[in-house]
Length: 80
Image (tube, rainbow, N blue to C red; front, side):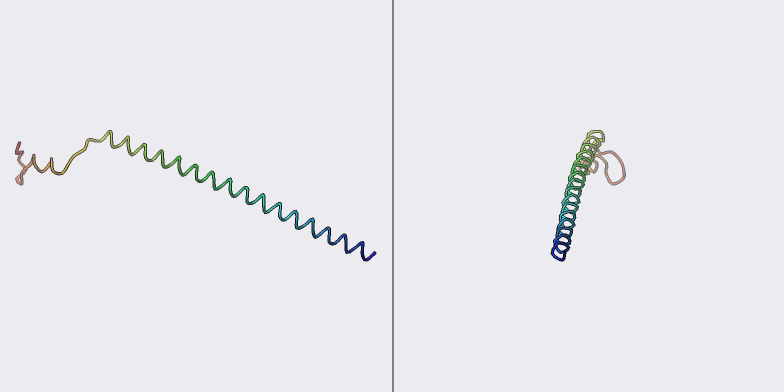
């Protein structure tokens, strides 16, 4: 009986270790999926931000400081 009990305990321990390894593998797979989703979302949001910035730049007129200084003198009168 002692050999039989020892074998059952060893098999039980082996099964627990296998279950634990499977749980760890599953957790790692889930973490990788979450990481991939975060990266995809980050790239999507960056593309959206860049497109909005480009759109805003196209809609707002550019004003150069040199152009403004050349057209207005120190008294506030237009020189052109």
